[in-house]
Length: 445
Image 1 (cartoon, rainbow, N blue to C red):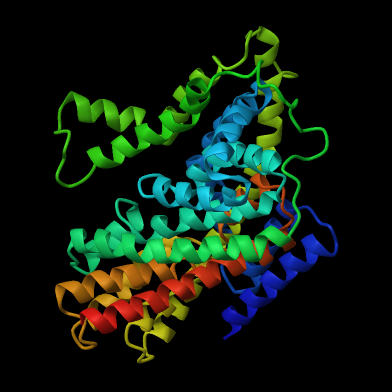
Image 2 (image 1 turned 90 degrees about the vertical axis):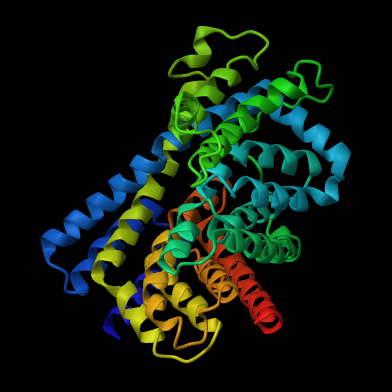
């Protein structure tokens, strides 16, 4: 109970420090990480090691992606490419349907692409859409983040669902089928939350001094196809890598698969996207790539996001190493709740330590010996359990989740707004997914 109480106090402190004391999120997260580890009774050297590993591991996996994504976004915005795309999308969908467009994009993109990378890549387009449509950035941002989360947690080939399917010996085809169905239901719930709750929270698309030059006639902006390529080429390459890594090896094991495994890495894919972004300005000059140019400004802006995201990873790693995930998981596993049991275990572990992938894999390990006693031994049941675990791993995204900080920082949200929108949104979406799984189980089993 002490660890659980400590977690509640830690979250309360982060909210109070950032919202009321106006403390920088990096400092609040770093202080909380050390305080939690020490008060939890962890050896002091383990606390320091956890903070370093959590910060370094998070930055190592997403730091360059954030920088390159920020640079691509800056070139899209300042060249007018993002405005060109926004104009075209709004003509096709209408101003009122921007959140729906972002939800659908998120649902599709995150099947092969990690949700944090997907959000970074699509962030500049989302800002341009919000500005052109005259709506709060929060509506599109939350629609996008929740759409990304649905397939990231429930649909292979993302690592969590694949690992859970392997641990529980579930049929991968059935997991993909039911994962996409339940994720679609959850995506609709996320869109509804975005248009009814997030849309009422005003967030400016651009901070003061950041707003790009308006292109009312679009005569200076690049055409649609060059504007699209820096965004969707990286996504396409990452998708092809995911397909290449699939167990059936659709591209074989030769040169093609080898090349795809390299260029499909998010860092390489975004570097190629950056190369295409250099073609967007009417005239590329060396000053744009200097310290005071577009590139330099993007690096400075991304540094703030990287440090906060890394601090969130440090806090999450301390929580993982404290043993709170095992404590919560084993405690909930004694409850007899049918199909809701794996959902609640995953939700408890996710909330406790921040990583959806860790929550999925840990829950699958806890559920493995319980499958037969609980009557979930049939192929359909195993697949639905995997999806239920994925749904639980969405609940909830808060300060110990690096994706929480990617969403809030790229969307100009305060941590307080992040808790109101991202955290509550993942709770609502996850509960709807759990109910959908319960209905599916009642019909199919």
